[in-house]
Length: 265
Image 1 (cartoon, one colour):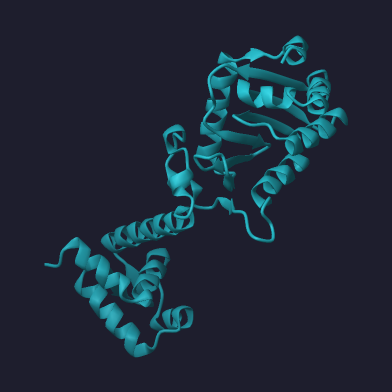
Image 2 (spheres, rainbow, N blue to C red; image 1 turned 90 degrees about the horizontal axis):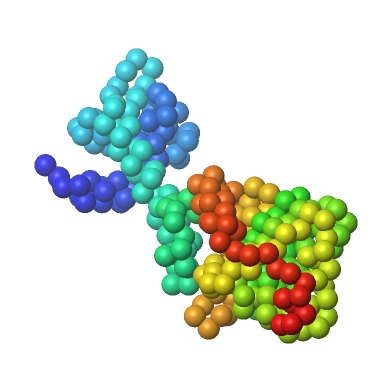
């Protein structure tokens, strides 16, 4: 009997094998159906179906072929493996920068995430991605070690126009960086005084830069030198739950910023 790795190799050596098994796990197909959906020749399909029948992964019925219970099991596992490998391939260039210790969710939930990286023509692309989300959101919550001038400006404009509510909890270093600039300090003071805005200060450093913009969760990813490497955003429900709970934890442990705190900074 072949080992599990040999069975994986058997499937991986032919894209048609994986596709035929996936199709038969969905519903009954004739050989003509399979030829039309895979572009495989009748001879190739004959070999594939014969191999699958030997493994009891498919059976022939009137009207075509259908996957057995074990064939459905293998098809499901193969689909999961392919999805995992696709996700890993997407994350591979940035995985060394991900704060995975603080990301308490399975990385498979990033399978459909949008990953934005800087380029020669768009070096600010990750920041622009979050600015676009901020500019379109009705409800925004943030927990972060940073609050840049561009995000501050968008949030200030949207909340001042009563187009957005905003709650933010930031590391002290993020607020001190803004307060050190007189113009940004005044803008932040105006923001704090705006209806629908609440900002709190976390004494401990927050290892993430996360924005919840309506149903989307956005993460900015930096390297150990603070250089922006990518942004990731998703509307996956598990990631959203993690972000909701993490925000609530930081919010509960943080204190409201008073205007006097900024003026003395």
